[in-house]
Amino acid sequence: MQIRDKRLTHRFDGRITLFDSVGIGEPGGETSATHRRDRESVSASARGIAAAARMALDPDANVDERSKARLAERTRIAQELHDTLLQGFFAASMQLHAAVETLPTDCAARPRLSTVMQLLNRVLAEGRCAVEGLRSSNEHETSLGKAFARVPNDLGFSSAVGFRVIVLGTERELSVSLCDDIYRIVREAIVNAYRHSGAKDIETEIEYRASDLRFAVRDNGCGIDPQNLQWGKNGHWGLQGMRERADRIGGRLRVLSRSELGTEIELRVPGHIAYEPM
Image (cartoon, rainbow, N blue to C red; front, side):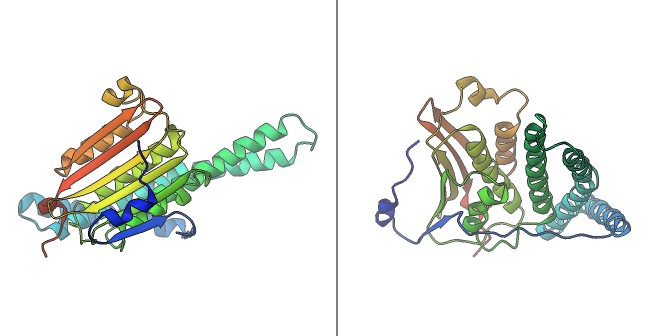
C-alpha cells in the first residue's frame, strides 16, 4: 500500500498532527504482596458481578456503569494472568538463567540457551504490557495518536522499521464505551504489520470527520495470502477478532492487500456512535 508522503500534509483542511515512536513512552512497573493481589482480585470480581447484576435488572443502565463493570472484569483477568502465566514465565526464566551460568563459557549449547533466555525476556515484556493494558481503562489517554505511537516501543519491535502516526482533523472526545475496542482493533493491526508483513515502513492514520471516525494502518510489505485474508491464518485469531470487535461497536472493517505491495486495514465508526455529544 502507498505510504503517505509527508509533503502531502498541505492538501488537507483542518489540523494535522504527526507522531512517531521515537522517545515516546517509558517502561514502568509495580510490585505488591501476594495477599494484597488476592484481596484485590476478589474485590474486583465482586465489583464486576455486582455491576453486572445491576445492569441485568436495569436495561437502561448508563454507560459509566457498563464501563466500570468492564474495567473491573479486565482488572480481574490482568491479575489472573500476572499470578499464573507471567509468574510462571518469570520462574522459568530465572531457572534457565541459573542453569546457563553453570555452563562453561566455551560450551557449544550456551549461545543457543542465551537466545532462548532473550526470547523469554521478550515474552515477559510483552506480557507485562498486555497486563498493563488490561488494567488500564484507556479512557484517560489524552491522545490516540500518542497511544498508537507508543505501541512499537512498548512491544520491543525493531526500530529499523519506519513508523509514524498521522492525525487529520481536530481530535474529539470519544464515547467511553468504545475507546477500548477501538484501541484494540488498531493496535492489533499495527502489531500484525510488524510481525508478518516484512515492511520497511508502517503508517497509522486517524481521521476525525463529522460523518465518521476513520483509522487506517498501512504497510509496504509482502501482503496477505488471499485465503488468509478471507478466513484468517490457521491458529491465528487477529483478523477474526478485529472483525468481531468492529461489528460489536457498529463499525466497519475493511482489509485491502496485494502480494508484494502491502496491506491496508481500515476501520470506520459512524460519528454518532464514535463521538461524545458536543
